[in-house]
Amino acid sequence: MRHGFSRITNIFAFKFLPMDTLLSLQHLKKYYATQKAVDDISFDIEKGSIFGLLGPNGAGKTTLLRMITGIFYPDEGQIMLEGKPFNPSEDISKIGYMPEERGMYKKMKIGEQALYLAQLKGLSKADATEKIIYWFKKLEMESWWNKKVEDLSKGMSQKLQFVITVLHEPKLIILDEPFSGLDPLNANLIKDEIYGLAKKGSTIIFSTHRMEQVEEICDHIVLVNLGKKILDGTVADIKQQFKENIFSIETNQIDHISDNPTFSIVRKEGNKVFVKINDGHDSNQVLTHLINNKHNIVAYNELLPSLIEIFIKLVESTHATARAFQNI
Picture 1 (cartoon, rainbow, N blue to C red):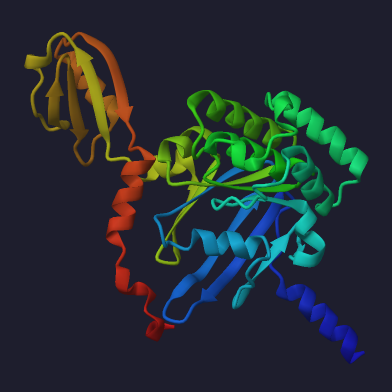
Picture 2: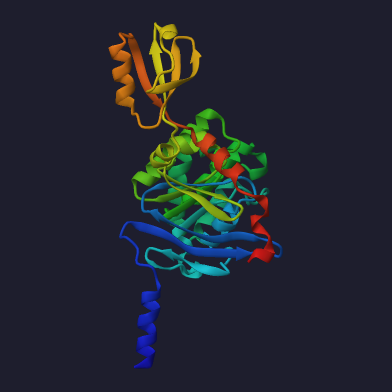
């Protein structure tokens, strides 16, 4: 009876997850000799989403990714995959990981290497061969089969690594700087494949320092710095959260617009004036003021901050001393 009670309490110790959650990180901590690499980080990732994991160098991103893939074990906290505790030996086949440091056998023929790695991930030789042919044809790599990795450029190696990562159709795909070394044409090609994989139900974790790519691709982002999570939300919600109520007004009467109780002028550029709405007022009142004063308005738009602006603001506000080991 006592044993049965113990099993029940262990079940209830886990956080109950929504049905659409694929991966849940719960209070993860990882310590190194002199610092906290990951300091009590929690977040959930929904099935079929493209999730951005962001942060400057040394923020803790790589340590997080290595815990998610089972390379490292957390010192505290737990990882839940599909509502169950993550078990690297059983669950690793559900994950495709493309690390920033590419690891391939340079002297081995590309076709043989792709076949070997696919079989390591659980595919039969026949299934692996079929999928390799499919991807090589799709990404215009058919002539690569008998080449060696050492013969490939950085961009070509990147395409090969991407194919090897997704070949076994994993539920969770982790891409660390996937566009590094790719020309614009191939970057768009890989981007389209990422969209396609997510549409088919794969969940993508996209780790990068390129904010413009994140804004374009990701549904949801987490920003980490100094081992801590400092931002978590959808791209749209985060931009709304950090907006400063600045609007651009395009008009051919720019000289006639001046400070007033409703808004203050930030700057003027060409036929545009940028204004900040004063406290206690809203954008409708700005428009009403402009119309009542017979201004000819060509365009009126709210300016939202870019992710790079938000990133810089938040990272600069955190302190480098926060990771000292004596604070554990």
